[in-house]
Amino acid sequence: MSLTPKSVQIAIYGWALTHTRGLYQFTMTVKDYYSILGVSRSASAEDIKKSYRKLALKYHPDRNPGNRDAESRFKEINEAYAVLSNIEKKKQYDTFGAEGFQRRFSQEDIFRGFDMGSIFREFGFGAGSQNIFTNFFTGTEGGKGQFNSFNRPNPFKCQGQGFDPYDTEKRKDIYYELHLDLEDLTADRQKTISYDREGRTEKISVKVPAGIADGQKLRLHGKGHGGFNGSRAGDLYIVIRVNKHGLFRRENDDIYVKKEIRFSEAALGGELEVPTIYGNNLKVKIAPGTQTNSRLRLKGYGLPHMRGGGKGDAYVEINVKVPEILSDKQRLAVEGIAAAGL
Image (cartoon, rainbow, N blue to C red; front, side, top):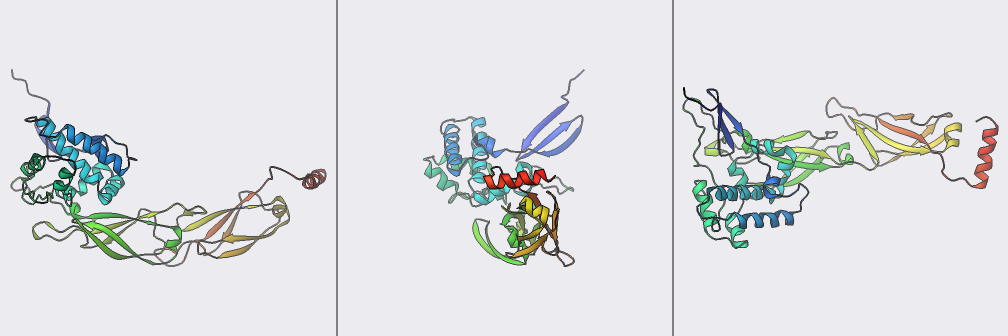
């Protein structure tokens, strides 16, 4: 009787081929670049650089001749540094997580614009450092050391199936986070952004519609990375991030603002000046007997609806302030109120 393993797994180019009980399955191997470099997610660019240099020196092929494990680790360290040392790639890695990032970025995308030769010279590495990448990634240029993978072998290409995890449309797309203040959402805005595209800085003007929500995306066709072998270029996705406001709070298209009033104003009524997201102040009436946590509605002073026209409302959340310290005159007045049964 012969014994066969229940499960065998082979890792190739960031994908794992698993054989379990006669079945083959491709799964993505997720890489945590922060763990690879031994730094926290809040590490500064200088800390990332120091950690990379230390690890690269440790696993450098000149110090580990013939050691395949060290060579593999050296490549992994450089891949992590190629992402975390690039502002735009690091931002997208932090935004979409390790798995989401690796689904969007191929090895070519990761090393595009990463000048290995310059990095190795800066840290005093020998020429053997770059040769490792040249041998591992066919098509690497010997001059600048920028990664190129148009001709790399594809271990997943099966005749008749055409499955290629590197040649997907999504891997050509670029994701860019655009941070906006609430005030930016009160009207259509034209914003100019700069982003990294195939090693170059591109500038483009984009129209941001009024009332857009945090997390929504704007898609610009053909503004991503160039297509492979003549295929169409990818797209640029603008991911909207709305900054937290110090005064206003958003819920859908409604805006909320907190205001404190005195006990006398709550009991007798009065007038209150309220700021709006549009930069002006409104005077609103406080009805006698207003309770704490009550709301005053300002119709049409919320954010514009992205579809269908019109606007949300603004709400003033009332809090009746109780003074912590009373003057002698105030204490006598409060005691008189208490004596009157209030």
